[in-house]
Amino acid sequence: MKLLKLIGKNLIEFIIVTWVILTIVYFLINSIPGSNNMTANLSDTQKAAVEAKYGLNDPMIIRYFRYIWHLMQGDLGISTSFIAGQDINKFLWSRFATSFTVGIVALVITIVIGIPLGIIVGRSPGKAMDVGSSIIISIFVSIPSVVFALLLLLIGKYAGIPYIYDKGSFATWILPALALGISPSIVYIKYIRTEMNREIHSMHAKFAYLKGATRTRFVIRHALKPSLYPIVTFFPGAVLGTFLGGMFVEQFFQIPGSGGLLVSAIQVKDYNIILILVTIYSAMTVLSYSLRDILYRVLDPRVRR
Image (cartoon, rainbow, N blue to C red; front, side, top):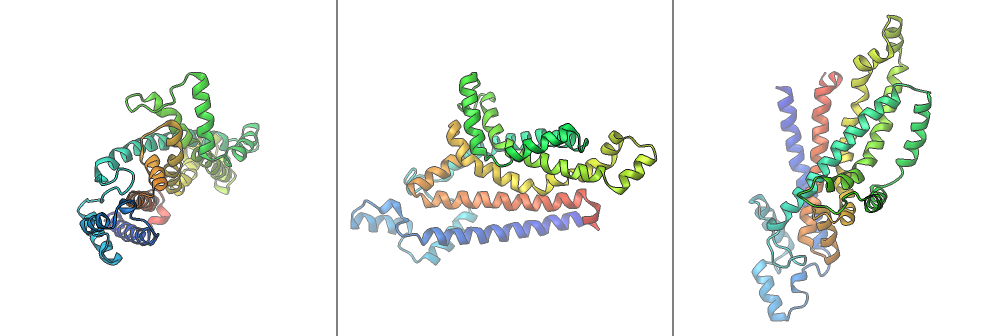
């Protein structure tokens, strides 16, 4: 019952925060001079006709409430530059689904790489693997996903690995997903390693060793769960980093996703597409924070109390 109450509370917070973000972005974008690109090269008569048809000459506050009303009905508006006059619903969701799918693969790679390696290097503090991992982490944690994308693109080209995205070939998903997943994987390794070291050197670990527990047994039964809390803590950052990194990674691997769409919309100043994509990315980040709070309550009894 308490969990359902928490979910309901987080849902209300999610709706309110998303609405605030949408409102701020809407007024910022519509305050930019010359944002109505559909009328940029038209005569005065044609411009007046287009503005009357789409209500572009109405006061901003009226356009805002009309936009919110249409948005609640699932109408995202029309493209003003990218595909002028085209309903955004007709092309946005297929592109978003592509980015979302690649992003999910990247998050899976993050977890598959980050958790086991974090545990392996963290359970042997002070040894060669632990020291070596510190050096590697320090190097890799400062490299952005864009650089990884370029390196993997070159590796794919010269090693004969498929690197140009093909929806029907899962092999072409691997390199872009790796480009997006390596950076957060390194972050997970870093924090899981730190938490594992802390648990192994804690007072209750010493008591467990005195009672005859081996280090492996202590790691599995006692140190593993608290060491995995960073996964929950940094989950929102991993989600945000995946989609923000996708804006550039999709360009390199020619992925027809929402990240590339956002870059193209910014280049041609299609403010309706920019508005909805910024709102969607922000909403997903807010949702990931809400999921983090719920997972904390499920995993950590201290939070439940």
